[in-house]
Length: 594
Image: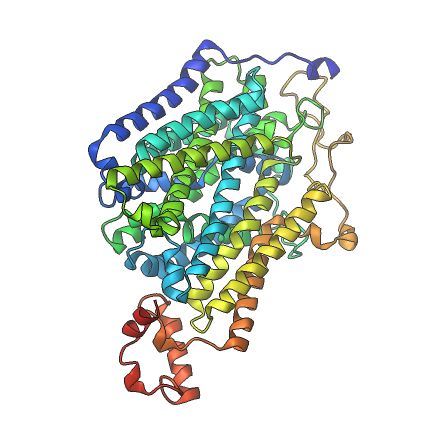
């Protein structure tokens, strides 16, 4: 076994470098082409939105590229391999989240004709301060997410090349920053199309080759069943990370995070010519997201089929969960020239597509929510304004790259680290939006209090979890019985567990759980619920909003009708202190406030 563990794995072949390099070169060429198109830089709006000039299929793939990252490709496969099938239940939550987006969020945000999604906050609450606080929260969220997205592919690349992870991140970061800065949103969208196609081809190739190696679908399915990789845990405890309830909640929250109140996704939706088209795009994106996640999930099961009797982590061949796919490529498929290059291109494509989307969105947010209101910048010509946007995009890429290098020092597998970082900064954003859309009575004081409460709670849990070392998530049974025999030999599934492998705990192991052991799958939704409760309570004590002083179109229609009915029942008139004729129309009153 020791001999096998020390076996030198093959590295990239010439063909692998050609396949991998081709994806990067084409991405750069797309950036150059879009950058030299006159209409892409004719105005700031064209640079960040390109309304009506992008094909709907390209928008769907771009939305998927922004949501499907290297974290998804590596992390979901890791979940399937080491933790089982509960992750598939997230599709229930994704469906619910997309339903909310389709019927409630998009009809409101799209019809307001916004460039920055945070303009909605000012329209709803009549508070520029709250708008900037919300924007700062998302800027922090996107910047941290860029760091982790650049770190993720370094895990795969360091396994198949001799380069250090920091050098790999530097290379990818420079490529991404170059084409995003030069070509704007058009370059981001069209490179996303290329990268999503590669993201699909890589895992599908892995699945096909692994199933062929073990003798077909029937044999592969038998191995998966024997290894309990398709069992579902229905424990509702918030301390149990891998359960059907937790992953369903997680899927719902992720949908809101990537598509509900996210500037990168909103720029894609708002580029459509009509609300109906934007809604159809959201529907297709939801279906595509589920399909892609399924592909990534089954690539992890394919890896388990190959290593069911000789797990690389348990036998000490890899040091992190997330290396399983990259190790599989070089250990068992490395002799197939070009396969490793395609896999790494898929992983890097995931990183590049998401990072470029967020870099462009960061530039848009800083320009629209901060600089554009300053006299100096508001007087700039369209060409000069685009130059400023390019500089902001460049700066965002550099900051994300620096954070990615810092991320390399964190311990724990990618999904958990990403969840803690992202969820700790995103829940506050959703608190403000959902309170504004679904709770007409919430005022700006309540919204600010909810934002702060949600942020503090999630950051407290995230930092506490990181400081105490993030206790490892119990894995399903692993085996090393076949490590001393020929690869592919069927062996008993339960054998020894080295110190770095955690065996599944007994049912009563939750007695010592603390608040820091709350599953990261629940952290986001718990922070959101807390923020909404605080927003409602503070609003009640400081004076609820008069529904007739709100701008038309900022509320969910059923909630608006219900609140107006309730207000009239309680007060008997539009405003108990102001005559009705003083507020002849809600639209006009809101515009006066704003």
